Every structure is written in structure tokens, then in C-alpha cells.
Amino acid sequence: MFPELSRSKLLKQICQSVTYFQIAPKSSKEIVPLCCRSNMPIISLTVSALNGAHVPLDNADCSSCADIAPQTANRDFLWQVFQRVDKDRSGAISAQELQSALSNGTWAPFNAETVRLMIGMFDRQQRGTISFEDFGAIWKYVTDWQICFRSFDRDNSGNIDGNELRTALTSFGYRLQDGTHHMLLRKFDRMGKGTIYFDDFIQCCIVLHNLTSAFRQFDTDQDGIITIGYEHFIQMVLNTRV
Image 1 (cartoon, rainbow, N blue to C red):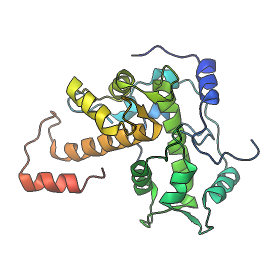
Image 2: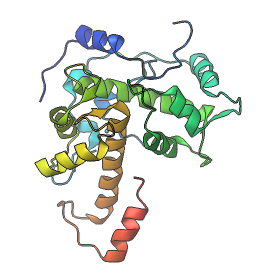
Image 3: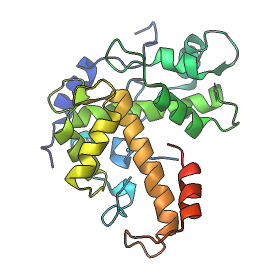
Image 4: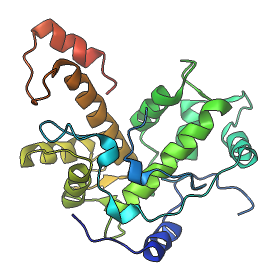
């Protein structure tokens, strides 16, 4: 595990970090580990693998981010932000609008696949957009991601390397071999720099969570091993959001 950060040091790191939601106010299905969840009004910037992966996500150990005092983003504040993201005034936020509003800390566009996955999680009306009723949940979700990502970016580089990714996934309850960690890094290293940025980290964790959930439906005795027919395997993969 990584050393604990003091409350003041962690808050200072968060305040000094890049603002991931580019529409900060002018006036100034849960898969995120419980210890990383908050109601902090910062739009900026998760769950166990097999045989050790059966640890409930709420028991994940993120001691470095557990000392943050949450604050509440009220409805009026969220409405102001929602209106600024809803560029065409349609009353709903499209994938393109959400992608434009989010930043990964680089000049590159926010990962479109991550946006698609998040909309799929929070779009209760299944329209491919985010209504204001759904916006509060996705606001909190992205804020929780910020806290989580920053707690594992120990060198404040704005990205996480292979060792930091391993620490994060181990903290979430995954027990993965070196080859799997290397494969994940290659898969989600969109920039080709041997590191994973904020938006790709979200995608990595969502995909792992969804695959693990699909696996567990067949792992009835929870021993980390399943016997599955070819067609069932195809159905499992096709029914999984990845």
C-alpha cells in the first residue's frame, strides 16, 4: 500500500490539479470505491478480481483519500453547470456535449469510449443523453473519480504509470498477474506513453468491473473458475458493456 496523505496535503493536491470539467462555475450502479465517494462540488476528475476479487468494493482500501470532508453541490449550482454544458439548449446533454465539457488534463479530446460508458450507466431513459435528473449522479461520479485518480497519481504527473495502476487495482480488490497488468496498461494507454490518463483510467476500471460482474454470474461457487460453453461465452461478452 501507499503511505497515507494528510487531509491538508491531499486537499492541496486536489486544488492544484487540473480542472477536469472545463465548465467550472463563473462564481468561482456504483463502482467507485466507497472511500473515494463524496459530494464535493468539483467536476474534474473503480471492482474486485477473481479469488481475492470477491471482496466487496465498499471494502476497498484507499486510505489516502478517506480523509476528505465532503461538501454538497446544491441543485441550483448543478442547474447552472448543466445549462452551460447543454450547448444546444435541448434539455439534455449529448455525448458530444459531455465530451467537450470534460478534459483529461491534456490537449487531446476526452476519451469518447469513456463518455459512452458513463452515459450508458446514468441514462435512465435510454435515449443516449443525460437529463438534468441524471446529471447530479454523473456529477458526483466524475468528482469521485477525481479523488480516486489523484490519490493514486502519487507523483502528481497527471497520469498513472504501471506501478500506480497496480497499486490502484490491488486496492480495489483485484489480484492480477503481471501479464494481466501489462496487458491492461497497453490496452488503455491511448497516448502510447506507457501511462494512463484520467479518462482512460475510468474506462479501464469500468471495463474491468463489467467483465468481473459478467464472470460472477457464472462463478456460482465463487472460486474464481468457471466452466462455460462457447455460445454462453459469446452471449456473456456481447451482453457486457465494454
